[in-house]
Image 1 (cartoon, one colour):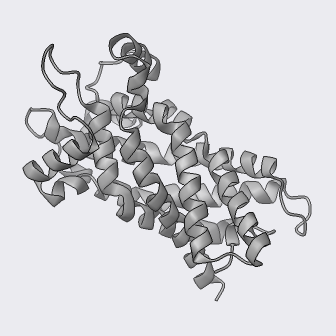
Image 2: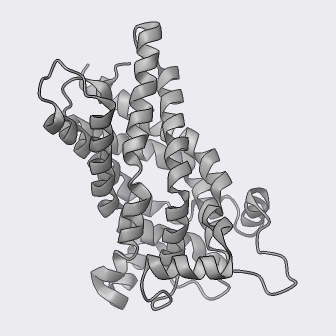
Image 3: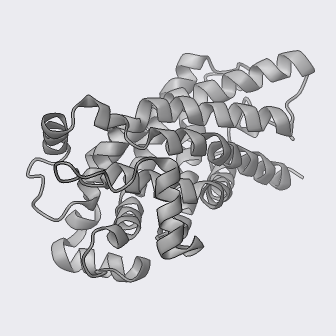
Length: 295
């Protein structure tokens, strides 16, 4: 396995294809925990004296399975499966393109500061692609627990209804929150590249094991920084139109006033549990695809 993501001369076209394949691997690996995460983040405050809808990750998993079966963990998966190809493809393609722009000599490896800058650019661009599918995913994941009739029937139906309700603005609700959530992507790539460099110095080359470890740790570090913004994004995207007049700022003020700072880390356990395998799957998929294209 070769470390194409750390090659001296990054190839945006190959990275576009490899990133899409890596994204599909990630969704299939981590989606059940993503559903649990979103439901924990968006559950309403219980009435006084009543227990919360979910006591934690295990309680949420048990209740989801008992009422909806295995299928409940995969509600809305069509949206990210369709969306991951352009999202991760853009992420890795922009990352490769930024690396080439920052590289003055093909034989000189980029510094970690330059890798960070390339990663930030990639995160912002991929976030803009992420918003519509993320919005659809959150609505499909949360509608079974709202207590009302199901408004949306799959990805396409949700997209049409959102567009009919508010046009593109409705589909892109939460754009600012998505950009803020994905801004730590620079750290994500620095951690991955740094750990792969360490593996290369110790063993002379990288291995599937080092890729799994580096990718998984990159995911954990990234999500440790991104969780508060992800909570705000999920609240904003799942709320009825007009609930938060000033977008993410209104969500933040409401959250602080009603639940306090602790609510910003609601759902953190399933996020961090999911982060390692799902991000490791991204990089295994990317490296595998790059190997096949270089074969």
